[in-house]
Image (tube, rainbow, N blue to C red):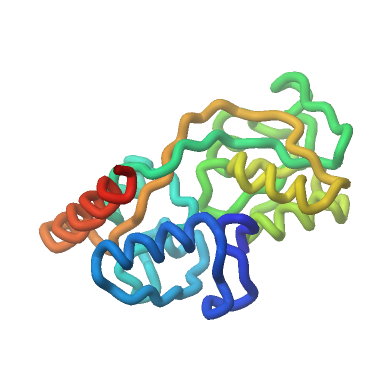
Length: 200
C-alpha cells in the first residue's frame, strides 16, 4: 500500500519496488527465500510482525520502537512531507495549525502533528499512504503528513496532488527484527553484515 516502496495488490504480486527489491537482495545475501506477509503498520511498530522474522515497511527507528523490536543499521534517510492539493500553500506553522490533517496510524508523522504542529482539528488516522492521498483528494482533509518519498510518488501519480512543504526530521529507516534479546541481536547482526555487503 506504499506506491514506489511496496507496489502490488497482494503480497504475492509485489515486485519491482524499493523496499521489496532490498528485501530480495537481503534474502539473497542471507541465503534465504523471501516470503512477503502483509501486516498493518501499527501492528508492526507495536512489535507484532505477524509471524515474520523481519519487517521492512518504511519503519523509522525510534527509542520507543526499539523497546519492542531490534533494528538494523539504517538503510535510508527521510524527512516528512506535506501532501496536499496542487497549489496549496503551507508557509508557516501558524497556517498549518488551521488545516485538517491525515497521517498514518502509529507513524512518527502522526506524533509530529500532535507534538509540533498541534492542529486545531483532530488528526484523521489512516492505514496507509494510499488512504492518506485519497483523504486529500476527497476533501476529507486539507493535507496529509507522510514520508517524503511517499508524498513525491503520490504527487507523481496524480497531478492534482503536490508535496507542498517538508519537515526536516532526519529520520532513518531500519529493518525491524522480531523481538529483543540475544536471538534478535544475532539476527540483526546477520542483517547488518548483509546490508554492508550490499552497500559495498
